[in-house]
Image (cartoon, rainbow, N blue to C red; front, side, top):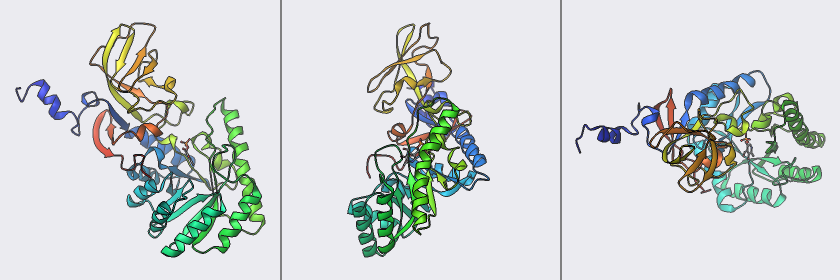
Length: 375
Ligand SMILES: Cc1ncc(COP(=O)(O)O)c(C=O)c1O
């Protein structure tokens, strides 16, 4: 092949920084950094003068660089939430020294890693039972480490979290007599998502988070001061700061967004999937070169194609996604389209790197170093 032919040039240049987005290989995971900055600026503004601050959840970023951008933009506690010890390690080694692990860490191998991490960063973990606290204290003592502990409160999910104030108090009392664990506060996660208008959203969030605040009152009235009340998520991010006592909100999705939260006008979707149309079996149907191996199925009906609102999701296979329209689709085989995902957590976890774009040009290839199913 001639080395200067259009085909060889396109092979050589396909992922070089400075490449225009339409020339990038597909499928690829794009991240529009200008939109991320704008989403972060909305948070910085909202939390500029509030007591409650954002503690961003890194579950959908999985890279410290993106979390540090929010910390630099402002409005945060200067720390993040991590779902797993491995994600906490990635954040700490990336330069973030204030971590809340929002789950229970119950096996000795991971508790050891968490304790080691607590020697170089402020590590806090959520607990909801006595045995777990005893084990953390025992291992932390052996390793000469100190781990901060928050009691997880079940407000509505019936997943993790203590179910009664008495249970919470028993754990707080135990933490206060055990060595190498330090009581720091309480946490609740609500996973609220059903949107029925602004009033309903805010009332729902307030009602549920208020249950967590009842625990704060009860624990403090027994003489145990609470430093941290960590409660709220994207759905309730602007409600938490209006509730006296909540010190931080655990927003995750707002950063990159998904069509699932399209009612928030202050946040836009920053992560999109660049795909090529590989089949057009009839004028109203197109098939893109991406499937559920790289875009896990989750509320697929919310998957959209940028600038093609009338083309709707029909079906998804391992390597293909089918879209249809009631009228003829103007694009043909070989055209590239951007898909707008509804929800990013499982999506981001399927990719090794973000293609960071600005003004539709590739400016960086950012490894998603915290991804994967390892813990
Ligand atoms: C414990 C916890 N906090 C906060 C969040 C963030 O939720 P959202 O993505 O809705 O902001 C999650 C999401 O998985 C979570 O599990």
